[in-house]
Figure 1 (cartoon, rainbow, N blue to C red):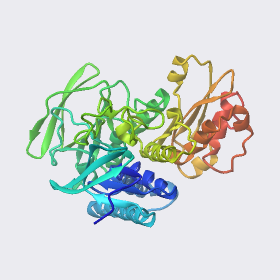
Figure 2: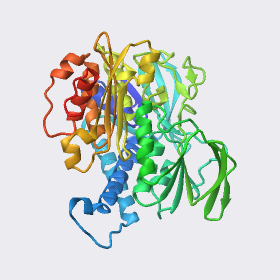
Figure 3: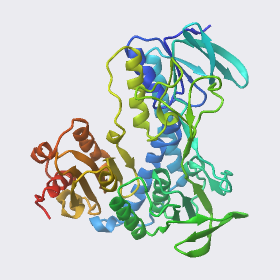
Figure 4: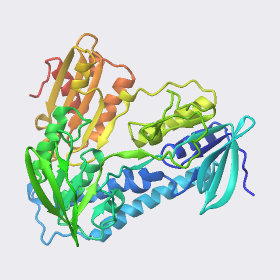
Amino acid sequence: MSKTEFDIVIVGGGPGGYVAAIRGAQLGLSVAVVEAAQLGGICLNWGCIPTKALLRSSEINHLLHHLGEFGFAADNIRFDLDKVVKRSRKVAGQLSSGVAHLLKKNKVTVFDGFAKLAGKDGARRKVDVSKDGKSVATLTAPHVILATGARARVLPGLEPDGKLIWSYREAMVPTELPKRLMVIGSGAIGVEFASFYRNMGAEVTLVEVLDRILPVEDEEISALAHKAFLKQGMTILTGAKIGAIRKNGDSVTVPVEAGGKSQEIAVDRVISAVGIVGNVENIGLEGTAIEVDRTHIKVDPYCRTGEAGVYAIGDIAGPPWLAHKASHEGVLCVEAIAGHTVHPIDPTNIPGCTYCRPQIASVGLTEARAKEAGHKIRVGRFPFIGNGKAIAAGEPEGMVKTIFDASTGELLGAHMIGAEVTEMIQGYVIARTSELTEAELKETVFPHPTISETMHEAVLAAYDGALHI
């Protein structure tokens, strides 16, 4: 019989749970992970990783259709959608197997099943594990970490049916490319799917209820993304209201009201990307002191819930709903349990990345938020068209924007759109985490020729010192 007593039991094997487990094992704690589906969670199996594989394929398709810009020519360019999807699933499978290997290597015990808080046994918490309605084990530990993640929000009338109305799952494994597609919701998930399908040749309509796409991003970046997507041939409707959808055999008619105009749009498929809700049901929260606010568990800066010995990390603990936030919380939580000195996460130091074309990345406050917070600011902007590497790479579309406190030189925020900005944003994240000011950033030597030089120029521009524009 498997061991049932541990120092920590972690409910969920996603990017928060499995990282917390590995760190706990490294610190000499005995750790169990309970996972009901696939190790790696939604992120690795149905989110972050497979979508990036799909987006990479779509970028290649776009590049193949623009070979003439680089002096090449090719005939009969085509793709095999089945192979594109299979490659994406293979990448996800490979990494899921890698997580299993890492957990085994670190001597973490993995239980296959659903976990539920089941009261106390003295100073130890009890966790019941079941599979297909049958009991697997009752685990005990003084510390239980809830890392059950989240799922797609479903709105009335937009319930995914697996055929005409898709969630992210169906959108990642299409058997054929829809000629006409509507994506409802323009957050990171919606925009990435819109970008993938547009690059693969679908006619895409992007619908957003708010007055601009990518509403969490800086307004200038949202506007540039809007312009770029229109140039690519997308139709974008903001401030939009959706009426009752009508299904017509193998197509859908969607009534949309936007900009004072009502219209009915016929499409082959609809992707619903209207947010997420936390997986707080059926995990034994009843009768505990754990508080739930809008499907997310309330925690303190050290991931502790209102119930002693129970913690929550990742998507279930609220925004930002990002895998790297979950992983960092997992490490912080376990190190605190082990008695280490830890520092709470500053949410404004967590970068956000959207892997559309062009890419978008940001950290810290937007210009509007900085002003709302009472800061007197200095703003620097530098376009990619002024960068040699961007032009040479055929990627002149983009901009870097920096926001500084005018009196202290603190970097309040950085916002980027363009090629490879998701790889570059970490430079600004380090700057904010290290509390660097404009003085250190201005004196930093950036390699030439690189697109990252735009980051330096955007700092210089905030202080009237940009060199190449």
